[in-house]
Image (tube, rainbow, N blue to C red):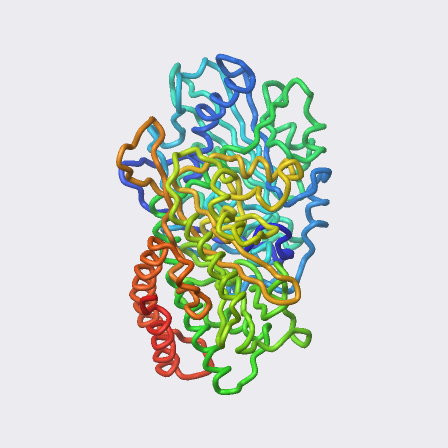
Length: 609
């Protein structure tokens, strides 16, 4: 889904769901689940390095605090009350969760969704990274959240407070203090403020505490000697004064630039504030580990199977003269996706658009007020799913009849830009701004451009849009790029980042084209491997064939043509295996007929160019 003005996400219930732990070789029990352990480590290592460079200090002061929040909330909001106003409640819920409005329970999700934990030398402590800390130095990380993606990752929990996003609304304060002896590992504590504890029914709140506590105990961060390592509190009890109190009376406070609320900043003296562009948890969350990568690849294959079976079904409906509207097409995709193992729902409302509607970048079809999908117009389908093992975001543009010369040329130029970015090799730390011209250059040669970013970060069973990295900057004059987008497009891309690749072209009143895939940044072998920075490339995670009818083969470079042919063989093998496993259930026809139709479509669309 193109980054710009994404569809709204409405709140839909106070729930938490657990993402169970994945056993990590060589690691010992931790005081905080996965992300919490890494965040605590970064308070003593990552944050110290940040303060060295930004504050000119050789060591941390007696106390230091980090403060950040997600980007969905108003910068002027002052309390959880304003957060609730910005996320209206809705009866529409994330599909398949089975929660009633206001219910709270923790359920299981696959082990692959958990991040690998760093080794710890103590059951109730987190080892500090970098140089040894001066005795008495304390650090805290305060996460002020309106959307919950950071606290969800930090505590290895998921929820359904926001439509299409498996997150819960909450705040967290993470504290790391020195051990009792000189050189001892840091002892970590956390306080988690949950909206799920704002129920009027005390029995419901008690049940939530029990289920979350069981999860925390299973993660090795329960309690010892009557002291809880993670305290639970009601979301409504959090505010600027409470946050300032938890930050302590002295020491520096880390504020995430551009996202911290005015109320939070005003509650702290100027001398204690230190601005950073990205919170340490956000940076850690963006770098997927091996378990997450495996889950994302699996989710991409399942989503590709659902999407290929939908395209085969849609073509069959048109050949048979059965009308299908844009909104009905979006519904059918959702049904087929839900038939795949581990699917929780859509990661955003599907964009199903035909002809002139496809030229509207964030078009949304509604029943009773949308167009029929026809065989003689360009059809753009931008869709994504939430799976227990990953999040997807894929766009394919198709034509089921005889496209015009301009449609084929425009599609091929967009495809070339898509491939040039996907096949790029670059040194670690390169920004998305430097890579973006690769995706735009083929279109520029024909006077084509598009007014949205080229790529955005994607979560691992989290939000379909996440920071801190992105690919873009060419949609407008560089001086007109907002400060938030500037930071995103200049953020260094590293191994483990999970990004979209989605160039496009939109001719108002005629057609729109976008091709999007999900890419994982991986190390790339090179001939010379010069310098200290490793070289990186992308792993393509969306095995959905390109539209043969829209490709003007003569425009393709030999390398591009060879890659497409090899990619289509991979699509055929991986998607067919997934279709056989899942039998592509969920269509109007019987399972066997649907499977045969999907396999025939897949075979035809993956023949050599």
